[in-house]
Image: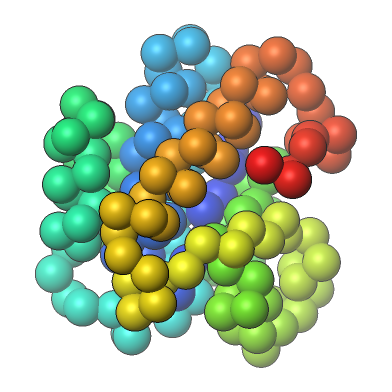
Amino acid sequence: MNYVLFLCTGNYYRSRFAEAVFNHHARLRQLKWRAFSRGLAIHLAPDRGLSPHTRAALAARGISVKSTAARARRVTAQDLSRAAVRIALKEAEHRPYLGASFPEWVNKVVYWHVHDIDVAEAEETLPQIETRTVALVSQLACGVAPGKMDWSG
């Protein structure tokens, strides 16, 4: 099995949505890839399990919440090593956290530019994450090696 790691601040909203969408579509395509998600500063997120925005968006798409972890978890060096693909959901927000805790990984992560809920509404950001995540699954299904992927989408 190969792994994709989605990183965000609290592992409460964006990364958990990306994880669930990825796992749902990877299973549909019978890929030997799975996603997991972690947070860089989970102490900043609400201690309520999973964002209601994420829950609602997954339900609207018919994706089980079991496609994401049961609780938020902080990223470890082992998590970063385990993943073949590492995606942080917003560079301006997550690069400094990585630099402070895992400086050797800062340039080994792909950075997307998806705002958190304090900047943009879920109705705007979650479809962005979904589009990019489904494109990632499609590239992997076509056999594109992670180092050769088109990240411009």
